[in-house]
Length: 111
Length: 138
Image (tube, rainbow over all chains, first blue to last red; front, side, top):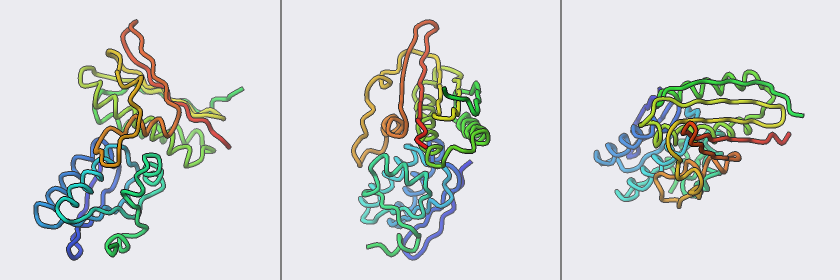
């Protein structure tokens, strides 16, 4: 079962999923990001360090978050993607859209 | 001539809980084929998992089970995913990667990008088989 830990750093929500970010877990990530935006926190960093498997549904949830945060005037960034997630981003040609920052700090400081 | 290093098989429930069983099968497969590189494991498991998710999401609500065979050969990896029901329209076409704004619809395209994908359907008994083949380069 995938768990999600969330912390707010400044004006940014940092979400740390642990487990698989897949068909089962994707709806919860969408909900967490939607609630954050509704609460006025429109910048989100998803720390993927503890995600052991990312599938197209998980990727779809990240795209949903990216679009909805941008529509609200913010952004969604990803950090510390493991090799498996990097391969998924590469195969789907999404690395330009969801740039994988090497650290949460760099994702937080990105312009 | 190819040599089988490890073969695992399971009849799985037609719901999301079977994804846990699928990942456990992957772990057993890799235990029996330790020489397979991490990248090959990732590419093969992505392809198989995307097919499985597609089947669970779109086919199995009307049915109850699906079957998964995973085989590690010394020169390739192979999976067979079988499920009941009518022909899957997107089995034959629709493997194109959608645009970057798409929030869904990447599954089959991702599977096909990760490994070779084959789909077949039979009316006797009615059901489909997806085969995933991943050649091991080294």
